Length: 113
Length: 113
Image: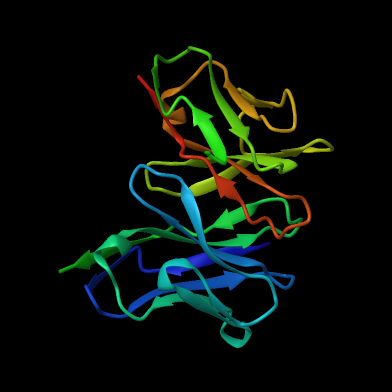
């Protein structure tokens, strides 16, 4: 069965520092992987997705993620954090039937000035 | 123009009541979903539905039922509400054939007292 594990429920960085949010996946088939962001009291917004094309995926707001099959990872990075990046981030994998998303437990990103 | 809209945004009700949450999408998608986000922010699929098939997560109580009057709407009916039903409910939609990249509504915060 498909699953994702997000390492670290809370990550704190300073403004301008590197952001690294970790996600490992388990999948019995080639996975489709996603990162979503949720700002307070809002819905989820897609940051980026991996669909078996390029292993380095660029998303919105300067985020990117690299698919590493050997490590079963899909970590999210951003070179320089902004205060506006503070939010909840979810890694997700498409279920085997391709009918729904299976989410990780989320990582809260805090950015301090 | 809101792509996926839900009403109401907040819903406070007493135990035992029956309530509905409405969802509409104007993206022309043919698959819609309901997800539940609990107090720990964990997101879990409840239903996925297109004009061919309703897929129910087996852990969802049968007090919950999706109803789709047409392709652009998927409403969620909940009977005999319980305290444990308190959560944020998200509607989402996607295009069949895409790798389940979903567009989410803003969520409905349901509080059962």
